[in-house]
Image (cartoon, rainbow, N blue to C red):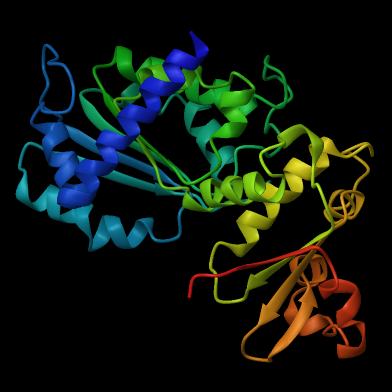
Length: 306
């Protein structure tokens, strides 16, 4: 059942992305509003639109972009609301989303389009010790509770995910997707990183690398940070060390994988771990006399977008 649902969600994502490619997200929403992308409801016409996001560009989408175009063109929308909560442990997206639910604000949302966009993290600490579910799955159960309620209030839900969905799929935290009408996955970095892992391990996922390897990220690749985190998580999982005590770099060292950054502006190589944790301005480049230990390996991969 789990694999079947996953395949269906993937297919739905592909359809939604196809609509997105043809018409833009605005076109997808218009088709959604016209009943072309979902079964008919007793009262399928939306009365309002709610947009919840942790993405920094959502305000532009809402005020001047495709969402504003939809609201201006379709007078069936009588109300709209944007809730932009940036990522953070104390007062960020998940804290505010939780409080919105605690304050019974979702009770007021009926006959609406609800867009929930998550691009930063699923895994921050729970914001309430009273939450009854286990800590790791906290945010997924919160989504399940909210989405279930909204479907009961005749709402149509679009879920935009910019994160690696393997996490909640693997841990069977994907029950909230059963209430989603349109599921759009915009996380291309994780898919790319997983392809890299397959190449690095020759398809032997459970054994790690087959020979010493150096991986060099191009500084012009926007997704380099997220791809590094996906790779670190994978090797941390395989590492004999306790993941809770590991640094981000140790799992790579355990499998003889050296990860570097080539900075185009400076024309220098850097340790990606130091770059990731301290920033380029606070670290020294690798001395050319030390290049041999990084480049005298069986395999070298360079990852970039140009």
